[in-house]
Amino acid sequence: MNYYLVGYMYCGKSTFGRLLAEAKGMDYLDLDRAFETRYHYTVPMFFDRFGEEAFRTLETQMLHSTADLDNTVIATGGGTPCHSGNMDFILAHGTAIYLQMPVDALVARAIRSRNPRPLMHGLPEAEMRAVIERQLKEREGIYLRAPIVLDGQNPGIP
Image 1 (cartoon, helix red, strand yellow):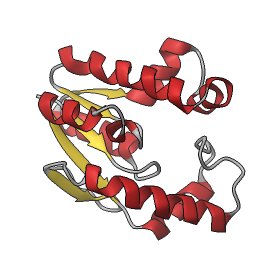
Image 2: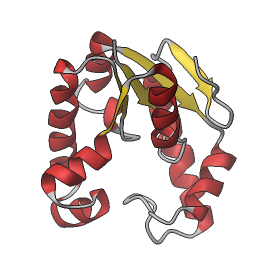
Image 3: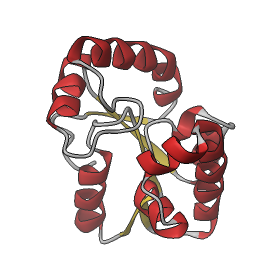
Image 4: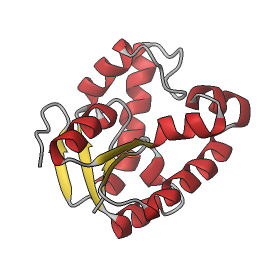
């Protein structure tokens, strides 16, 4: 049994994933960190050098490599379930948990982040908010396919 954590960037998938894995006695895998280890680039550096399309292709391969895992909590990237039919893969290989957060909370976390994501790097707050609102609107329907939806600001352990 695997849990796949989905949700917009800055919703807390990595932090919650570690806590969930510890509470359930499961292994933990952060797909972004695994990507960086395998390809020797941070996600922002890879985006800058090779572009989003190349990143999404390799990200999908990383996700598909989790098919052989068991008893693992997997934190996906914010866009992972939204490309290449990846949400179908997630639902076929484990239980998806959506960490849902309001735009205001996501913007506040993005502003405070020491590791800006590629799509937010260098944006003033108003533009950051517009990007988050637009992308969240586009992605929410996919995230909501998860059978478990938790409040990302106070998720608790299911």
